[in-house]
Amino acid sequence: MDIRYLLWDYQSNPNEKNWNVLCGKKDFYKKIFLEKGKNNALSVINVFSTIGGKEFLPEGISWLTDVFKSNPISSLSLTSVSSDRMIKGLFYNHISKIKSDKTLIDDYVWILNRMVDLGSSEAYLFRENVITYKNNS
Image (tube, rainbow, N blue to C red):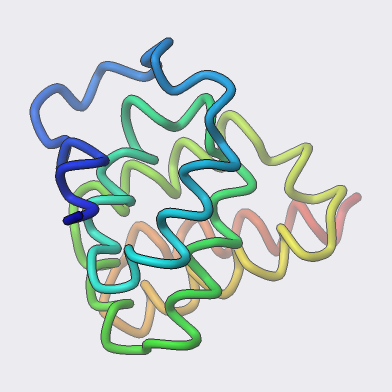
């Protein structure tokens, strides 16, 4: 099974933030992604930045980080518009939870660092805000 079909390779409406069909299916999708989705990180980022953000984030950033660390070429998917939307949503909607969990903050900063390495100025700004936020807490 191609993970793009399982995750609908969702790209249409970036303003849609929640699909009820995903509710309660976090463990199922985590398993599918970690077992079969390593080569389709962009499909997962598309879902995380839109319809799956409410259900899968912020914990999903750790899934992505695990995949990117084990398969560095897959982190090239962090150059997408969806990645910018995802990091922005993480900051504005989940920063309190992220900063209270060492694994989540480390993984979020890792993703931001990788995006900066890939040339994202938006990730640079969010990384500076996270570092400031982290140090002031």
